[in-house]
Length: 129
Image (tube, rainbow, N blue to C red; front, side, top):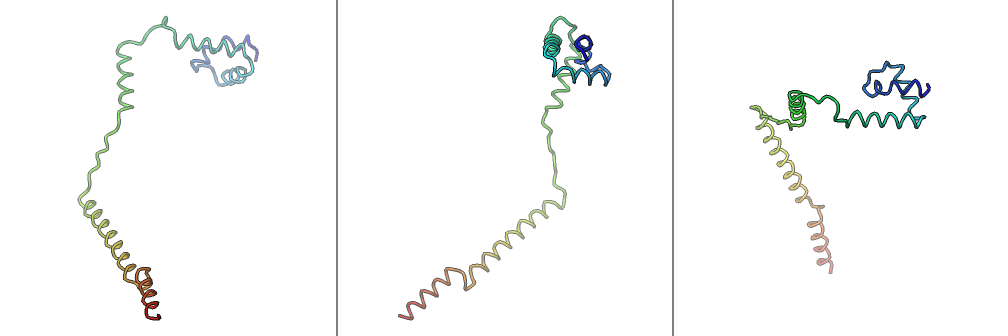
């Protein structure tokens, strides 16, 4: 595609109104042609920063602000415990605590645990001397 055929379609390309074949041709042409790319960037800058065009109405701005605020507002998570979830959670926590205490107790009363094992080794040493 030549620069003469691409240049007239740059405005339509910017607004996304080109047919798919023409859009693909412009997209294939722009990276390889510095002149058309500079022209497109200048056109884009003029269209997006120009204050000469029609401005949106106050109602349109208000609707946009409201839509953005609604989108950005944090969602309040209101989760309530059902009748059986709180006692179930408490029971699970108590069961975990009881299991931890049981394991700790069993580990501390075994003969092979280091405090008792060390005391037996020391006792055997003292008796053997």
